[in-house]
Amino acid sequence: MNEQFSILYLYDLNRDPEDIPAFYQDLNLVRILDRISLKWGKNVRKFYRRFSVCSNEELYRRAIYGDIKKEPVYNALITFVENLDEAHKLREEKEKATYPEQKQVWHIREIVSYCDAYEKLDKALSDAKLESEGMTELHKIISEVLDSEYRKLHTEALEVFNEISKLRFTLTYDKDRISVAIGTVPGEGAYEEMMRTKSGREIKHFNNPFVSETRLTEIEYQCIEIIMKKKPELFARIRTLSEDNSDYEKPVLARFEEELIFFLSYCDLQHDMQKEGYAFTTPERTENGIMSAEGLYDLALAIANLGTDKEVISNDFKLDQGERFFVLTGPNQGGKTTFARSLGQLVFFSRMGLDVPARSANVPYFPDIQSHFSVEESVETGFGKLKEELSRLSPMMRDNERGSFVVINELFTTAASYDALIMGKRVLKHFIELDCMGIYVTHLKELADEQEGVVSLRAMLDDKRMQTYEIKRGEAEDIPCAENLVNKHRLTYSQLKERL
Image 1: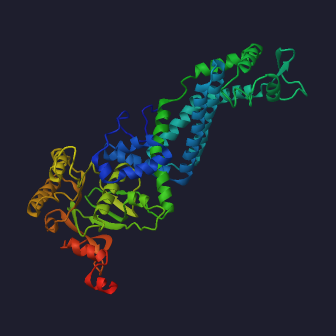
Image 2: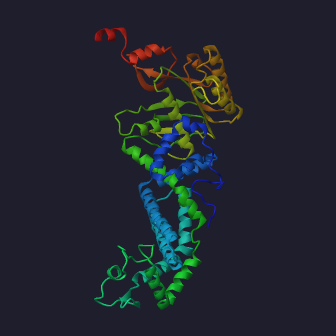
Image 3: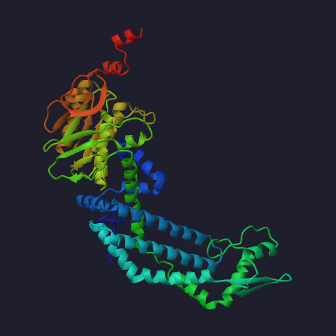
């Protein structure tokens, strides 16, 4: 059995979560993770910081996700998680138990529930048509553990617990004295009723201490001590079974249980969004430098607009072989930043080995994502806006990370146009020489002038010079900001004249 197996990692299993990089905020990934965390808990967020370390690991994850999102497999795994939660609840109850014998019985109940969850999962995976290397290996490991240990353990633990559940005894209360006898006396009434009337205490409920309640009254534990003396073989078996299996969980399965929520949490989000009409697709890997998508949209914006009548515009794009960077120009509030974010999200989820928010997509492997979005002046540092931007841009360019995907949004807006153009061209040249791909959103139409590896995109306007939020190839043009705002808010001379 492969003890180092993981459904996330092919190599380093002990890799710590990476620090949250700048692009998480820039690409609005935080909003997406907030939505996921609402159902799956904050612990799931760490897995979205553990990137695949290489191309093979990305493809390994993608194949596993392809199996997991199949309806029979997904349903089986969701049921498995629910069954496992039951075992975890029993473990929590076990820790609340006051007396050793009671802890041992709750431990046996936990084992029964845990093994049962894996037996049901094993059967479901046997009936499924698994295609990925990872899920096939996982099923093999589960079957091996069941055959070698868990089935036998499950049978023995279930036998013991059934014997405990069938245990009955009679309490006789006479002249301030209580006697305990194994078995029941017909017509003597229920244990709970007898305790309620005879104990002389304001106690509303008396429950089976091994089945439904961990808190015991003193008199209940005294009864248990008497029964233990009358049934020494049973309680010896309970003690031995519990102590011999104090560490029954396999590390390889514990790792699987923890990592599984990464895939299930995203699959759950994908199902929710698809019900609202949003498309997802498995990206195709390209090796020739071509990158494209149809129906690409900003997933974070789509999540924000759920429950509203706001439309999320999708766009198509393509970078052909030899083309490295989009330079996107156009009017303010025309969808430029949204499109740039959607490109970054496309690369991020592709790199994580998941489906992407688009109808179709072809994405090369990128070892890293780098982003730089416009910032405000910092009161804390006293830096002006330009200095803040340069201080963040500097480490990106010094890293010399080859082949990254780069998203740049409105750099050098406070610099003179000539200076901003010179610096912008140097930034583009630097990343293109490092064989990077990406997008540069700018107000400088000259930056989109013909240069090697650069493709000009425009945020489109309709015939009335209103924003359409569509992004298409085309030469950059002057779009005066004032004119755009006047058209947007219907403040032209003729429109004002009509109102007056």
